[in-house]
Length: 158
Image (cartoon, rainbow, N blue to C red):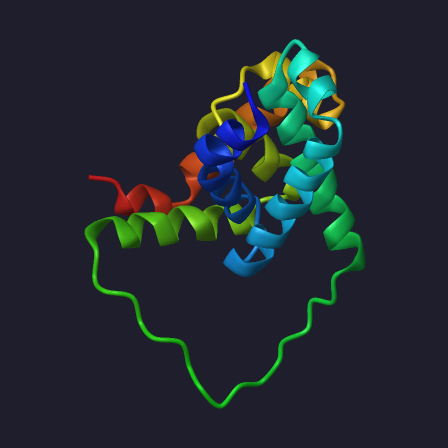
């Protein structure tokens, strides 16, 4: 697969993954841009890897960790408030899921997003995060239990 084809097909999913991992939309765009730049530089190696998706997600997680290590988390005051999005039935569910993910530890959030949003198998998640597969399984189980206990998420399901 050519790099431009990969970017055209996967960029929106990578941005959404970064958002689900806790990035604001603008920062997610930056993280994905840096990820794709790093992958472009060694695209032959990415493609020749047994699992190119896992390779790209590993770079994404590493870039995100690097960005968080440098990031200032303070708020900046503003005179202008952003526009409110249009009412959407899925919006409430999406917000509830984001709140639940934000309340989780980064380790739990990472395994859930990579497993259920990025749809990576446990073995690839283990490679992406540099963990044994058993640790991925136990973190996933604990994260799902915490998510199931969250009243906001349970209440928003149909």
